[in-house]
Each structure stands twice: as C-alpha cells, then as structure tokens.
Image (cartoon, rainbow, N blue to C red; front, top):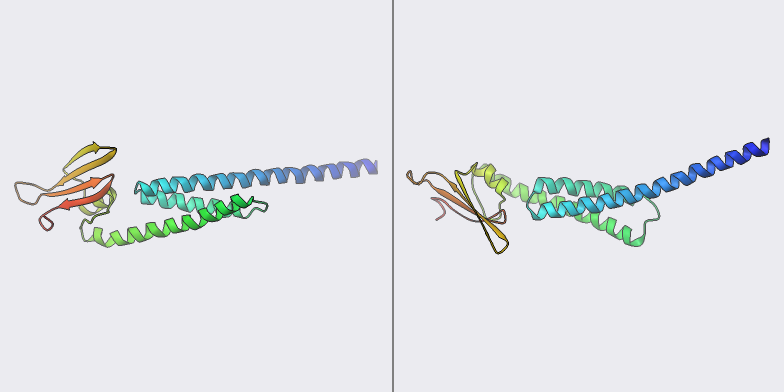
Length: 173
C-alpha cells in the first residue's frame, strides 16, 4: 500500500511538472509571437503617420518582448529578435514623442509646416470647407481648401500620401 501511494505521488508530481513545462513553452511562444505582431503593426502605423496608434503598438510590443525575454531556453535567433524588438520599440516611442512635441507648439500657434499629418492640420486649422482627392501613379494627393475667396482669406493645404507637402495662405504665397 505504501509503495502504491509513493508511486502515485511520484506520478502526480511528474505530471504536474511536465504540464507546467508545456504551459511555459506555450506561454513563451505566445509572448514571442505577440511581440512580433505588435511590432509589425507599430511599424505599419508609423509609416502611415498614425502616431497615437503606433505608440500603443510599440508599447505592447515592448511589453510582450520583455515578457518573452524572461523565459529561459530561448533560441539564439529568438533572443536576438526579442532584443531587437525591445530596442526598436523604445526608439519608435521616442521618435513619436519627439515628433508630437515639435508639432505641439506649431499647432497651438495655428500654423502649418511641411511634414504634418492630416490629423495635425485638423488640430491646427480645423475642418476644411472642401477636399479634392486625386490618385496618380499609386500616390494619393489631397488638396484642402479653407477660408473665403470673396473675402480674400483663402488658404490651401496640399497633401501627398497624408503628409503636408505645401500650403498657401496670405502669409505664404
């Protein structure tokens, strides 16, 4: 009877530790894959100038990568990729903060500069009266019209792929 109890105890301990090992492997893989996905989404959002969205994805990628990094027995290629994601996610967040801080003063002064996004122009000048969209050789162009031609205070903002390339108003002709 005592041997049977010892055998059952050893068997239970074995299954307990083996199931935890399998769970840990799945968890490591889950965090690793999430870090890759979030980083990819962050890069995509950054390229589209969706900075707030990109910041969130970079933050999630960094957190998932740090969680995956806590696991032992990562393959060298996985470990290198995790460290890359942590470093580049941090850099991406810093780039976004720098961009938004630079444009913050320009927006509060109700000005427009080359390189601003549509959201930043909306924050600075508000909704345009008219928008003209064109697509030429895979590039999207938009012209936003503000003001009143009859009163002489008309303003135009020209976008290429969602980024200001030029603008025109009384002060900038």
